[in-house]
Amino acid sequence: MQPKEQLLSLKPYKPGKPVEEVKRELGLEKIVKLASNENPYGCSKLAKDRIVAELASLQVYPDGYAAELREKLSGYLGVKQEQLIFGNGSDEVVQILCRAYLSPETNTVMAAPTFPQYRHNAVIEGAEIREVQLINGNHDLSAMLRAIDKQTKIVWLCNPNNPTGNYIPENDFVQFMKKVPSDVIVVSDEAYFEYVSASDYPETINYLVDFPNLVILRTFSKAHGLAALRIGYGIADSSIIQAIEPAREPFNTSRLAQAAAIGALDDEHFILECKQKNRDSLELFYTFCEKKGLLYYPSEANFILIDVQSDADSAFDYLMKKGYIVRSGSALGFPTMIRITVGEEEHNKEIIEHLEAYIGSLVERVN
Ligand SMILES: *Cc1c(COP(=O)(O)O)cnc(C)c1O
Image (cartoon, rainbow, N blue to C red; front, side, top):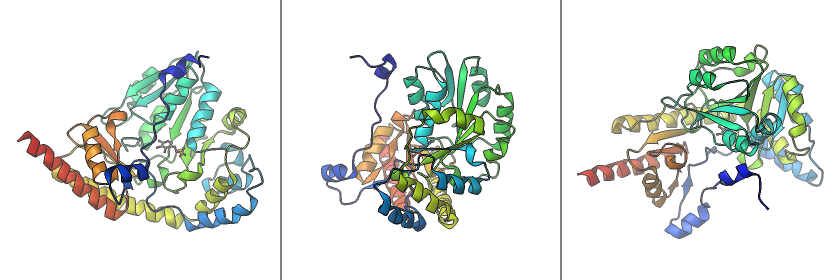
């Protein structure tokens, strides 16, 4: 009873410890989880209202085509309805793309470190993985181009990149797209799209006509605050969408998720407010890092990767004992860095105080 050989090399996703368990073990009253890039302000009330209305129809299968959400989103984005595919989170669209294009005879090119699900799903399909190291947290686009050959099926751009928060500027993106062979799919994963404020960040939708091999991924999990419901989407030329649709489960997104997403799209104000608070909070982290001389990557997302000048796991443990759960860089490819999700203002201030004490304790140890 051996599974596919490639599964033996993969570990199942390791969820963070449940908050309740950490509370009990450490005798803490308050635990703040800043580990999964969730929106600290929840979601729009309009999304919640839609969910409540939808509770009357739980016995009915969802519309597998998500027609109402599709119509709404296509108008919102200015693309044709046939250019959209919905997934149980954008994670599932990653899986669908891998199922549709990757096999043991093919390879796929991605940055490292980047979002782990590209690699994970590609390994399951038996494809060769070509990882190209980041340079100072940025995609090395010329090395990624050199890694492409006749067997390459998908190239992954994570923009902004998780876990560094860096982004690919428009000009670099366009030059890259011009050089990628037109039969290679380029995925631009834009899970943090709504948080970006850089003026030279590409609005990739405008390039779908020039580059019909482009697939854009976005999600309702991050800025829209609907991570629990699992809904994300892909935008591409309709020929790609048509090609990958058979790899999608018929009822992959739920009624509640579709309804909430429709409500969320009506609340631009909520997104703008979250974006502004996130920007302001990132500044707090930058100021702190600069004061302490800690290396960090400027972030276009809702998290920040900070060098704690020591073992990431020991910083993680220290912060957990203070009631803050972050993501240790040891599992992310950055053994001396931690990734902190930007939280509510009060929590950001508090975790910065704890970090300051932690950094101070390192200096004492050295002396
Ligand atoms: C969070 C995240 C996703 C997955 O989001 P879903 O909840 O599956 O929509 C995809 N890509 C990146 C880079 C992410 O950080």
